[in-house]
Image 1 (cartoon, rainbow over the protein chains, first blue to last red):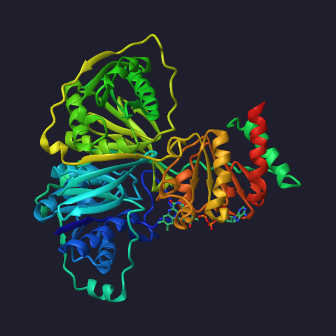
Image 2: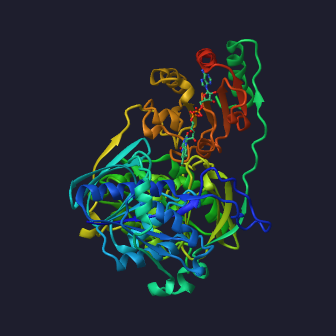
Image 3: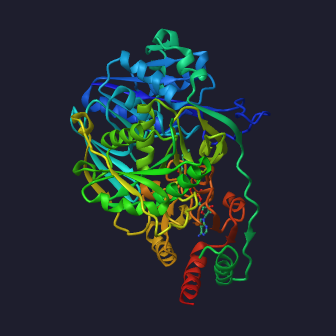
Amino acid sequence: MEIVALMKQVPDTETQIKVNAQGTWIVEDDIKWIMNPYCEFGVEEALRTKEKHGGTVTIVSIGPARAVEAIRTALAMGADKAVHVDDAALVGTTDSLGKARVLAKVLESIPFDVIFAGKQAIDDDMAQTGAAVAELLGIPQLTFVNGLEWLDARTVKVNRQVEGGSQIIQCSLPALITCQKGLNEPRYASLPGIMKAKKKPLDTKNLAALGLDPAQVGKAGDTTEILKVELPPARKAGKIVEGETPEEKASKLAALLREEAKVI
Amino acid sequence: MAQGVLVVVEQRNGAIRKVSWEVLSEGKRLADQLGQEMAAVLVGGDGISSHAEALGQWGAKKVFVAEHSELGQYRTNPYTRVVVDVAKMMEPRIILMGASSTGKDLAPRVAARLGVGMLSDCVAFELQDGTLVGRRPMYAGKLYAYVACKAIPQIATARPNVLSKMEPDPSAKAEVVKVSVQLEDSDLIAKVLELKEEASGRPDLTEAEIIVSGGRGMKGPENYAMLETLADLLGGTVGASRAAVDAGWRPQSDQVGQTGKVVTPNLYIACGISGSIQHLAGMGTSKVIVAINKDPDAPIFQKADYGVVDDLFKVVPPLIEEVKKLKAE
Ligand SMILES: Cc1cc2nc3c(=O)[nH]c(=O)nc-3n(C[C@H](O)[C@H](O)[C@H](O)COP(=O)(O)OP(=O)(O)OC[C@H]3O[C@@H](n4cnc5c(N)ncnc54)[C@H](O)[C@@H]3O)c2cc1C
């Protein structure tokens, strides 16, 4: 089976975000970069799919040179090969549709039966790319999946989280699946895995090599635009509810919630 | 020329979901500012058209209704086809949906089919020279961005529980336009076998106005009964930190945070939760935060509006009694 995992490198969850002097974007120095945690679920599910049905796992990622580190991590986890799209015209683009066009173009040139992606990237938090890629490829999408079972090598049954429950969906391949917590426990890259990853094929392509026009899918072609960014207003220091006993504190808290905050 | 606002109304099992009232209210405000009209599109199974006229009370002048036996449950492809058909028919300037599990699945698919960008999960909107600008959290709420859509239609999803609802006008009615649904085989590849609803009967975390949440400090699954009692008294629901979920004390669907659910209740009561950055990412925009924690240095106290420094096992039971008294008044 031809299995693809879309993967993005993002700032570590704990990164403290600083805004640049113009207030237009963040300062990217001193950031520790990691594989998007949701993409980890996707890479893991791709590997499990290969373990079940055989085949090849290909990682596809867009990003600057530093993204190679996250790609090597995915290869060290067990993926077979990778395509890395790196082009100056893509730097600073914040447009999911443009990125989806690039990814879809890569996917037109490699065979695939199933594509895994994260449910969203934890930097821009947009949750658009998976669905847009599926649309551009004209295949079904199964999003926010936290459970998956193969009925046979061409049919998957998934659990899709919805408000207050889940949808159980059956779908035949090809399909794109966006993954979230609950689906699996991503494995760590083993030491032999890390050694092997260095020799695995990593194909770096720019937009021209993909036959794409930088004016259309690069920053110049963005369909959305960030006008400004700001840090959230600091929450003002709260009140510590004082009291001699826990009962007294509970009673004061209830009164404050009713009379001052007016929430109960 | 593109005109007006189109709101995609969301239903489940034939009942319109709460987020739709919020999005309709926002759609009406934006349409008024543009001096244009709002329309709605309602997609569902047999009988769904019975809701259409009443959407006029929420400001929709026109309601496009797509009723079809294959559309009872939300499915990506058939719903995309209908919404795109309506968008082509109406040519709206703006399309709005809720950032629910449905809207998050549907909106980017619709946007890609129309070849336009979109704004995800916005918490506020404004118009700048007729261009839709959304305020949206990024980096799990550590940053806010003001983002504009460059192409028409401008598509956005709105985070549930954040936008204010208008007062419906009981006398207003909408013109109902039936949409004929023509599905292709390719639309029906993915089949919804079942919609499993959780049995608790409590509201979903993303829609709840009050959440009582418990973390590692709860010590074990049995102790959540006390949080359930408090939540039920308050008409709310129960959440959990990742530590509690990973320990197997609560289901994954209860997890609040970056890798769980993002919630925006009026009141969030965090019991035995330290307030890690990943947890705050999920509940940091709650209107009022209460923390009950025995460690005075727990980071949650820096975000809490009201903090109780004490053993939660000694504070929650009398709190339940106090709430009972207040509710009896
Ligand atoms: C990529 C990533 C994603 C993550 N996503 C999430 C997420 O979505 N949601 C999430 O919650 N976490 C998430 N985490 C985990 C997060 O970093 C914390 O580990 C987790 O939130 C801690 O949960 P906790 O506050 O319940 O436990 P702890 O940090 O152990 O805190 C327990 C608290 O309970 C208090 N306590 C103990 N006993 C009592 C008592 N008797 N009375 C009162 N207080 C008591 C203690 O003082 C302590 O402050 C994520 C981590 C990573 C790396």
